[in-house]
Image (cartoon, rainbow, N blue to C red; front, side):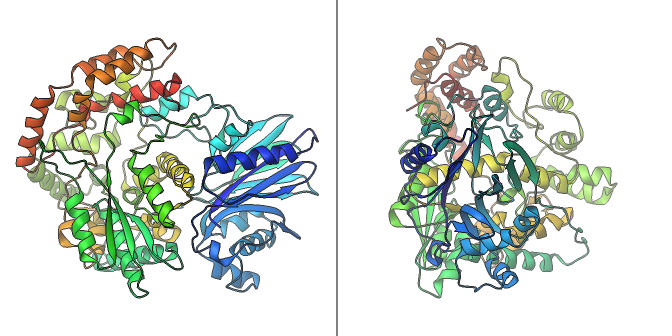
Length: 633
């Protein structure tokens, strides 16, 4: 069952019926879902409901919430190894996935071991009335969200969505300013902390146990580096295995019947998911609807974006249909409205909101997304030069440096400063290198420049590609992104699935040697090899990073007066962490719109994309509005 869960454990012994009504109402107001099922006793209330759009798990039915020997289980889940689990439990393969999940937990004396056996996307709560104990757990990557608030001596409340806890009256929706600032500078390592001061997340791969009103946590699973594959193994073998595992990951996430939905941006990851899904469904005659976010067309600007690649991908597969969704007008990123619970645009113009709405209305779910692909499976080789340097692989280092030089026109020293220095040196030194060698150094203009008093966020970069792959997966950005997508999808009765975050696929990708990620200056090399015969050649070999909105600076320049009005209202707020004078200077520095049109067209004529970094100020502007309460609906 892909759905939502919620509950409350009272420490005062008061009746929980009122809590059940509040949580049920909050679930229904925050998601398109069925009427919640409710369990109630003198201490606990637990609820679960289905999202409105059916998927492969819902069709199999559900076990009762109360199970002898296990307790009371509520779950939001999609299992990928249910056959293996059923065999181990002596259960029928076609039985309820919830029943298999319950059996897996009941069969283990060690709950952590039971959870570690489950390969899937899930969030669950297990209440044992006799022991007065509660287990909260979330899948290893964090695909399905789970949050809680703990009021000592009063209650512990949990829910799939933060907004459910707030709307039910069990958590305050005041923002956590420190967390917002940390995220603003690109440091996503916030741990359990969320955008809200009163709400914590259950971390991926973690179980929380409530016993005798005391809460403790324990990690039950994480992706561990296995034995590295030797670089002497033929690359074709590695590419073949990578393709097979990705294909299996896609097939496990497709609906059991009917059409499927995907993101289709025209990039490597989303195109691969869309094509593999289409080929898997072709035999049964079902379509794949690839939702493609494309830049809004203008009569005065030559747009370069991913739309040609999305179109050629869709045209190559007879049962893949491209559904175009317009990119968000850029000014909306700073002036749009959000729900009080979290700084996520809740606007019909937001393309991801629009995709969820279209998919939910059409009964499509889950939506298969390429999110997380370049963190590990289609990794670009980040850290390879520093690894060759410290491991004294001089020949390989020289070859890649020369390839970079030929492709970019940069000097060897600039390349080392930008690509190796940021992985080997402290941030203060990389900042100095950036000033010395220019904006093409380790980083461009920093979001930290807009803060009144804060250090730049930690990138978590390491000197080897394996460290960087793990850092990208575990630095918190994946967790936050998954939670925001789940929030948007739930509003429209659908959900997401992420083939690139498949456990077996990630395990293999993490073992791949550094030498196959970037070859002769071409990043994501082994993944490109794996997609031979899958993707159209123009898509497979494209190395230009194409933005969703290639006219951001132009749109911001046209909305300059609107930005100034927003800024003037913010000056009445107190204790904001962002430097409003610095934001004002950035607004004043925006170019004349007509001059920008000419610059964009000159770049387009050369096949290039104009620099868009002048709009970094819009994020601190938007977050300032959120913290000041001026962005709420």
